[in-house]
Image 1 (cartoon, rainbow, N blue to C red):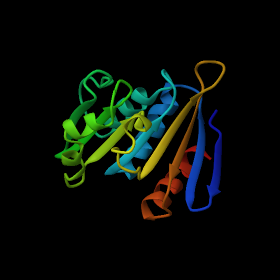
Image 2: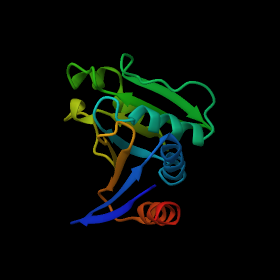
Image 3: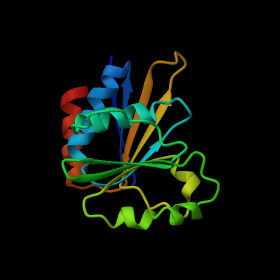
Image 4: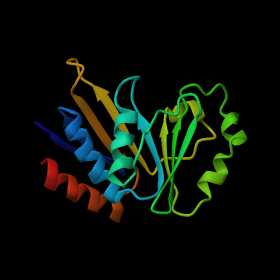
Length: 171
């Protein structure tokens, strides 16, 4: 069962979807991947909330073959899918935000059409760039069900197309 909820806070657009299993997570990731092609996406959630699972499904829906692992120790895992650069960051073990400068985060940001998926972005403040979208995953008491909240600070064409697809699939 998937529950759809839309809330608009000031300028930010927000949609929450209840995901009962990994198949629903994969389906949602595929929809999100069709619409969010580039920019900065924050992945928020506690340990084990499903951030890397969502990222894996996102990359696989874009055609990635092979493993998608959490970059907890490497901080960033690069992917190139159909000539598009995608970078999966996990800042959980970051000791100092300045480390992002040392690994060249500005170089990643300057790549045309790059997609940066950033777990634990709060650990990288103030170096980490502002998000174009935020995905927040919350685990429910059953340990299986997740509530994914998608937030966009802007009301733009990408948001409208994504919202329409989500409404068609999950309403």
